[in-house]
Length: 474
Image 1 (cartoon, helix red, strand yellow):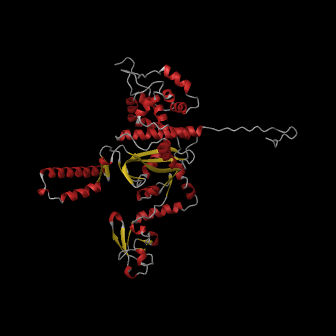
Image 2 (tube, rainbow, N blue to C red):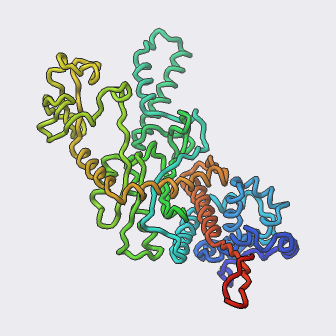
Image 3 (cartoon, rainbow, N blue to C red):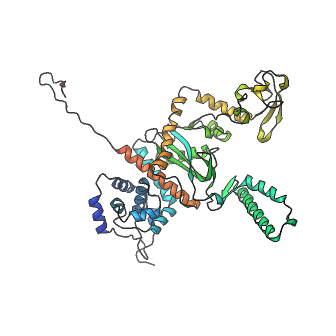
């Protein structure tokens, strides 16, 4: 056992740090980041270091270095290690040292808890400075490319259909080599079905358990991660909540996102009596999200935009659901005001209604291409949707909802365009979370530094000696 169990760290490189101090201006971003990171609590991370063996680099230095590197677009440990050789600002943050790639990589991969706690600390600082708007929350998500190829993606529906096709093959007429290839295909798709069933997901990525097949802009399907962010204030645009998963869409994610944001704000010091207000786009117009909004009106006021009606009939300009009158479960009227037949039990608790006398109806061609029009109604879902439509129709709702885009969308544009972070370089779930949390921490730091900059303009107005009033000449 060492005589002194206290962890020890490398001392600053005096020569390298002195040179960086001379070259880096006082108002440089690196100095501002270092000063702000001095407020982050790193004692738990420092306790993990040992007093034995070679001394490590101070965690606060490494944290400041990675935050600044993220802001200037350095997201890989290899590039950051190379830049440390010549960049004076990076050397200033590193204490004059040239830190190797493995050290940088290990620190980023293993400290997701530190990044999350530092992110929550920035929310607390912002709340103390009056930069958090609890009545101006907005929730949305973005997709980030995963570190995986399409060859490692397995889709449940595709593998299920492929197994049915392989089962129809008569293996008795195949050669030994062909039977071996056939069995390899069967094993491949059988494994894919098992993995998707265990994960309860529509797709899995073999090399990245935290990723799934997602649709990116441009109708492109690629392995990716879903990043759900809860931001605060159209002016400050601070991140107060983060969810990282492999969900293919936004459905049913609103509850977890809002609850997490509430917890972070309460820990930051927001009084429990303050009622939150949040807005979400049409991607969260689902029964689970609407039910959460209706059941928690006491502490959160949620605004959700109604999802546009879709489907094969709507795409061909046939009558939509708004043309039908849903009076009660026993009485549903078609577009011509005639009562529809039914109801009959349908899947997932919904009811099925069918048209009566559609063949002789004068509006048959505008209603359906089939002999009779069918309509499936989930009355619980319709009731929740009516409540949200009523809330969105109130006078204060449209103006506040229109602040949603200005609140949360700049977060993703800053990550992707400002920092150039579009693809995750990690594969394990813990390291994926650490990498994304680090970028969001850097974003919050940039917002705090931006909001703190004050611009003072001085006007020299000569006074008249007779009336002591400002002169008309400037």
